[in-house]
Length: 298
Ligand code: 2GW
Ligand code: MN
Image 1: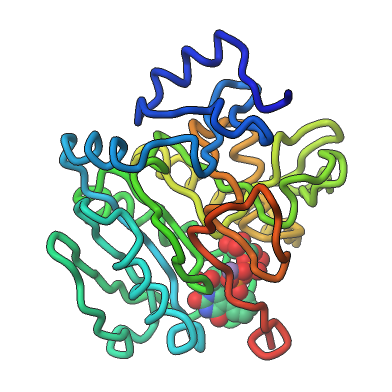
Image 2: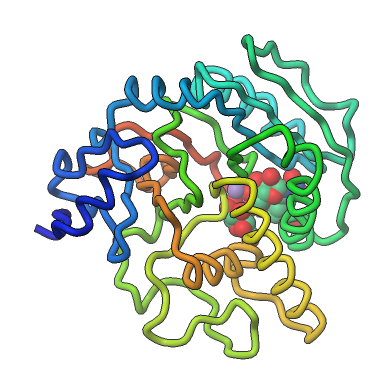
């Protein structure tokens, strides 16, 4: 079956960060990539062992989120409250909220070992620029205090909430999220940027998976590279009057094509309830809020 890994890959998997993976526990899905990175599905790891191992390393895990304009009132409180219940419980966590209105950030009760920092950013006029500016802002933050206090960081969209444990099984040098709408599509139909003039372009036949920019993570060093790459590509495209099909997400997909992620998260980690039930989606960890583009994208 397609989910079974070759022996060489299996030994790579055993050496993986958590060292607790059971890829054979989900024979009906793909549990490793062609380059030997584990694809994390529910049941392929032991959350208790992952937590215990991460605890021994005494990590600080960063979680960054942008909440600009109406997205602050609409999504931030629930995102943070549910992160308190589910994100890296038992580890040291530092939230970084980027907003143009620090005073409006809701006061969320934080568990022990968990802190929240608020960073002021300028508000971009176009919504596309709100999304794209994140790469440059993250790059700067990773080179500053965030980079000094965290060892691993996850960068997420705010228009979603946690609905299940999102723990240290998701940590690795670099982590990409399979896009819930596209994980079972044929590769040639994936919505990569195909315009060869764009820095984000992938040629026909290129592209492993379509990754979702709502969740990506990794070590500070890896994320410094990722954000630099994406910010550079966005800047080059803009200088040529181009904008990639899915904005920063297109550039993220180009980066992960060139620099393969060390770990891939199944769509269970960031699921869209609008898709409906799927047998292979056992326990979603994050759920997207319904899209209200008509209301919010003006
Ligand atoms: C973005 C688009 C239209 C209207 C508003 C905004 C907006 C985004 C905003 O007004 N304020 C704000 O804080 N944001 C932040 O950018 C927020 O963290 C949000 O979750 C993130 C991405 O925007 P979002 O969630 O509306 O876009 P999605 O869910 O369609 O995102 C995918 O595609 C984007 C590029 O078009 C990004 O790559 C994103 O990471 C993807 O998940
Ligand atoms: Mn989103």
